[in-house]
Length: 239
Image 1 (cartoon, rainbow, N blue to C red):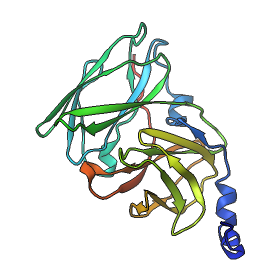
Image 2 (tube, rainbow, N blue to C red; image 1 turned 90 degrees about the vertical axis):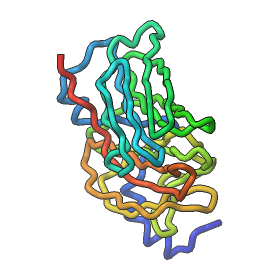
Image 3 (cartoon, rainbow, N blue to C red; image 1 turned 180 degrees about the vertical axis):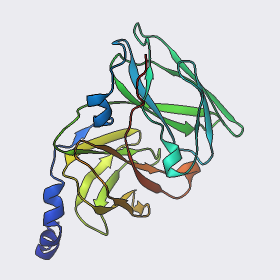
């Protein structure tokens, strides 16, 4: 359906700023870290964990120090940490626990890759994981904005300019996948949702040229949808 002329005019400046290439499966880590931090060994990968559940999750990766992920937006997503010696299809084991739930997660990472691991409740009372391989395509001239659908029962997720504006990330974004685009740093209100349901609006603000940002859509423990925006960062590599 064609949008009314007044709506197109109202959103024209913001849409112009948000023009960029959208690609499935793309996501980028902190550009500042990529440019200025020392590089880890060539047989290393970056990995971060995301708590999509309704309770705190404790992780004991065999290749990293222990981690805790809370339920506030700032606590749900870890930084990208370096995992060493990932060559040869090596199994990278992570023990996870949340309340009475436990899980044993086995990852296989490719050298020099960036990976996001969504931690999710399993029907049998365990914890499962959905790994996503991200693309590290840092852009010095623009900000990078990604959208992760971390809600398992949301087959057609999307992000719009609030309250009912054009799509920043049009549907359908499938569960356990991500899409991304480069944007000019702008401020806006975003509305993420799926299947006729929406999460409370979230502000998009404070973007910087060269920065990497992610929008997260979740439904913790099958309850109401929640969305939030965070900046992607990498842990500094130290020999």
